[in-house]
Length: 147
Image (cartoon, rainbow, N blue to C red; front, top):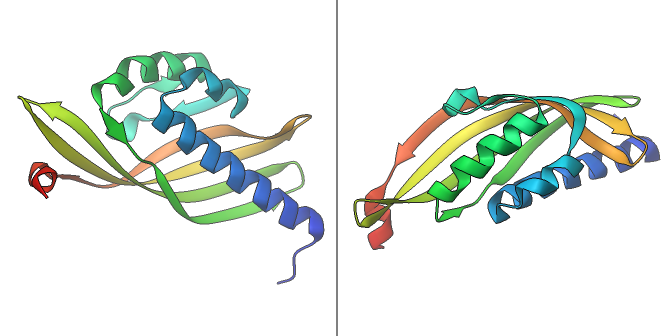
């Protein structure tokens, strides 16, 4: 399969968008999400007990949820993209270790998930128009903090 220069560019732009999303979440810079999602985006974090809704509802949920974790790291991999003009679909693997204070100790939770995404090119670049988390696994590892 040979890719056009436009498709190569689109793939890099969407990949950068995915990495920017992860960085925003890990820095807890929730307000910056408005530059990642379309204004009419639908975001579904219910696979791990989170919110389902639009960008505003998602930002409100994250403002409440993220402070519970002292550290997070979203690592994206195995990015699969299907691009059709100004629209695209994606499936993105995410490994997400998170540290949470627990009874005077710290516990490490590790999540394995996929993002089932839809993207749309807007006048200022690619944006996520739909994101649904799909749960793979969860591991609670408080003993790792002692290492």
